[in-house]
Amino acid sequence: MSSSAPPFAGQSVARRGFTALALGAVLGLAACAPQSPAPGPVAVAPPIAAPAAPRMERAALLLPLSGQNAALGQAMLNAGIMALFDEAPTSVEFIPRDTGGTPAGAAAAARAAIGDGAAALVGPLTSAEAAAVAPVARAAGVPMLAFTNDAQRAGAGSWVLGVTPQQQARRMVAAASRDGAQRIVLAAPNTEFGRALAAGVRGAAGDLGLPAPAIALHPASADLAMAAGAARAAAPQADALLIGEPADRARRFASAYAAEARAAQTGMEAPPAPPALLGTGLWLGDPALHGDEALVGARFPGPDGRGLARFEGRYRDAFGATPPRVAATAYDAAALAARALRNRESPDALTALRSFEGAGGPLRLLPDGQVLRGLAIYAVSPAGDAALVEPAPDPAGPGF
Image (cartoon, rainbow, N blue to C red; front, side):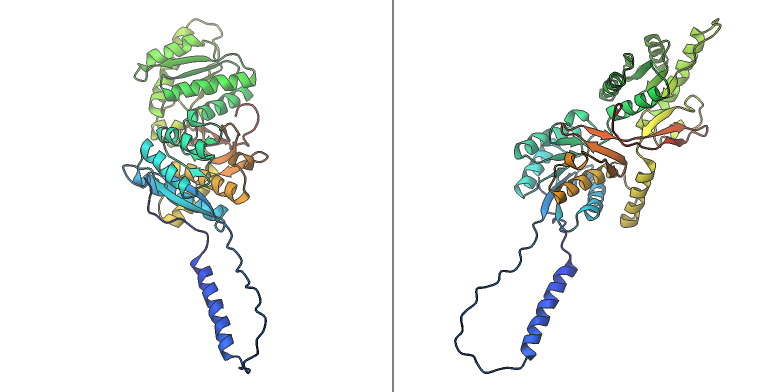
């Protein structure tokens, strides 16, 4: 459904006031000028047309402005406003459209926005909504910059701006390979998230010329000791172990894996070194990392902390609140759309030669809908905090 909220236009009230004041001044000067006798008939000059106002390009923000995610939608709208005034305040306007948080609502909002002249769609939020909007956008030839992290929603003209499991896995495999790891094992739940991690691990290993990785997927509710044993059996000599579990379960998994390894190595004269422990962005900011040594030194990916801190600081100054993490994704998508419309380019053309510096780090959009994202790498400190060990690199080359 369509929102009745007005578009965010670049023209200001001050500019309109200045125009009215200038016109009044001209009329006032004419009234005070000396009056001469009425002239005789003269030829009528052709009228002078007023200069046409520059055409404002339009982008629609497809957001859940009602329903259970309304507060989240408002925060994302705030981030979109920030992006507009950063990128194109005088040549682009945003038209917010309420999706209601449903696929049907998202598709209807997209159709209404395109009917109102939207040349780009920023959003929607979820994978199901993006699946419903994609054919609408494709039929109209309008690019879609969705907030979901489901890479399956990517395609020509449709980009996924959320940090995907594939991006996280590829980043960690590339970093482990650079540190000398050859044999990679993934232990993760057999869920969409775990399967996406597996696809990322396989893809990165192939691109980097590594041996085929071992993939050990377990039921989401599996006993962690049994899952750890299965992971060890899949790759007894692994150089790096990527654990696709939230911090609390990952901590218990790592403890069980280490105990399993010690039992298997009893009596060995030269037991192999334990694998390097790797994690995912699920760990960032999770208090479950505190108070246990099992994950100390383990590395995991996350957004660039410096860029994110700048964005969050500006958001707090403007709106008096700390933004949810997805607001940074909304900012990136809106900024890319505004810049593309301002430059009369497709979104992927903007990043063909140079990465876009987003709120969460640099990224590049590819013509097939894939997004290459630079992620920072953090390590779990002895206190359980996330310590930055590698800033977000430019996303180019193998491993991205």
